[in-house]
Length: 497
Image (cartoon, rainbow, N blue to C red; front, side, top):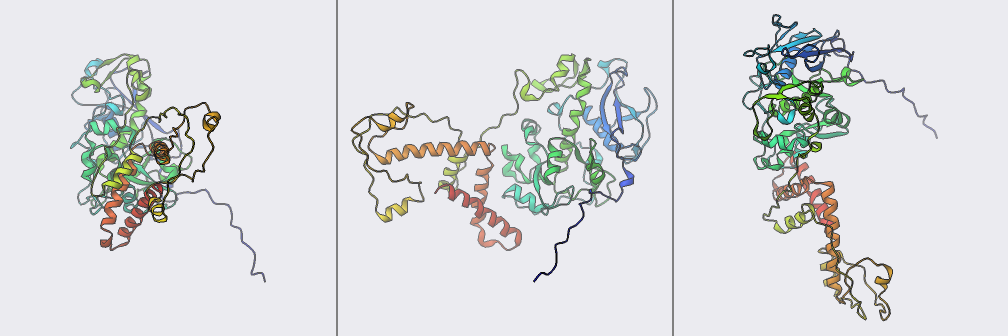
């Protein structure tokens, strides 16, 4: 008997954020140019920022001032003028810039000659992080402190997911979320050169693994993660901070058909657990590519170059300026950041760690096989009792049982292929050892491709540590760690069968 028919719902409406939609701009042509007063007006625009903070085109004053200050060498005392040599524009930190173009000045410089003006930092790699000198609006307001109680020795990705409530920090959605790095992984050299590991939560991760610390991770929906990393479409910046409220908002750096109306100037879900230095570094990382047009104008530029210990600014030729816009890995004579393999660790569970190290961390060369020697009359089969056979099944994957063969004629293996192959000497156990090594090489190669950073071995270490204290698990989060640890070690165990 029929109980009714299926009901069809109308097409999904295009998502929209109705609250405050009339306070922002949706026009991609709204932008503000920032000019260097030491250069002529036909080639002095060093930064252009989208101006979506007002319906008619406007930009948050502090966001613009700090962006220019970063590029000018971490100077937070700069000011804007509407005309060359004009009076400074007087605005509060959370005021709006409505002018289409502005000149950026710093005290202490003259601007008659380029050499006597302030230098420009050409890219993120040459930027020095201002430890203990963050702009005032980027520091946590009074009464706000990062939450404590995060698990120190844990799977950092799982810890970040649970810390963020399995919820995207921008959209609030819980499905299709991914763990995103605040300071990008490809900035490995810059990260360690600037001692950014001082802000990690887990002191045991202050070495090459500092990028994977929970303090450098946050949760974003998959599409937002791509826009955050690949497109550099948005950043998190402070606006209108209040006592006990940090007010970090999503700020778009480029136009978007949907993200602008949905997320621009919307309060982010709490980012207080993430150290402000990491968020500030992320802001700088997204801003520096916008300097490239200034470097490509075929003009000499006064730049700060920190490579090879040269920290004094000097005039760079147009060709030298162009080099700063080329990705590091493509520059002649230089290479991109090179990742070093993590050194093996051996602890109480040395056997398991040793095997995991062999599988996950070694970078083996292509195996070379010995020349095939003439086959013997018969390949004997090892005789195993039922108990011995069962005992060996967990320590090594056994080859299928080999039948006796008549090898009085030409070797059938050699006849089948002219390539060198494994030596068949009449000792099945040694032959199996050889094939096992080949199998291990294959597993190691695949593991290296899928996990070049060595995170898998760290997960194994963490899982072992968690299960040692399984009996003390008392709440939902603790049991989530236990379940994750069992899953990780289950994969290790399956790979050993």
